[in-house]
Amino acid sequence: MTSSADSRPETAASARPGRRSLAVALFSGAVGAAVALLASRQPWAEGAAEVAGGAFPLTATGSDVTGAPAALAIVGLAAMVAVFAVRRAGRVLVAALLALCGAGIVAAALLGASDRSALDDKAAQVSGDATAAVTGLAHTSWPYVAAVGGALVLTAGLLALWRGGSWPGMSSRYERGTGVPRPRRAAGAAKPAAPADPERPEDLWKALDRGEDPTGA
Image (cartoon, rainbow, N blue to C red; front, side):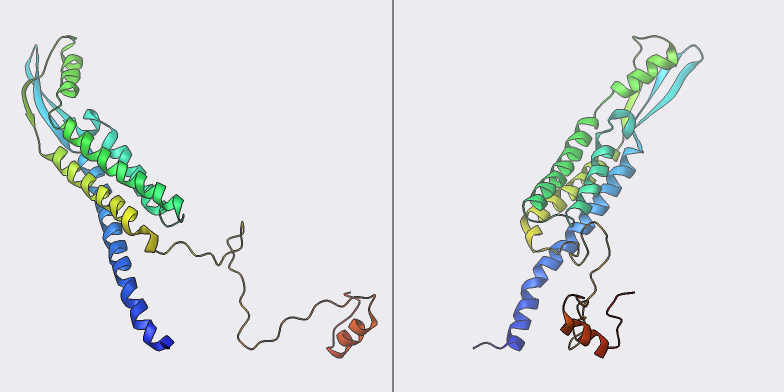
């Protein structure tokens, strides 16, 4: 028969992969979402618009090109937290949502890497000509940085799908609807005595022996 002491190292060893995957997923999800949010605020395209006074410089940030990476990064962060609040099928669904957020960030960033419509719109506003187009168009590397962030979020989602079943969840030691932990009786402590029933004389005598008021007053 295997003793409990012998089984403890095996249990600890089997828990290590789950802890490692949890740490990697947390790091990837948090860093990836932060990178995607940061990159969406940076210039993705630059150019100029021809106006009466000459060329007017224009810049389009990631949010000007597409709001998807920033929005999906925020949803991904919420899903990362929600992974620990649910179990079983709910955890699988939230993990799938996290992975989809990462894939969506990657797709939106790569599609926006060569976009010029945001700058054309700005050129039309600056020049007052609806048909005006930006000149000297150049793209930056920030869309690809956002795509890297999305790939990290996607990695976190895939890890949650693969290893999420072995991750811990929020503690269940709370009363439902109160958020107050249930009190635990110390080992060896006597159970609290039940209130005396006034219809049973033996309960009244037991209460008096304990020094309690059997009337409850």
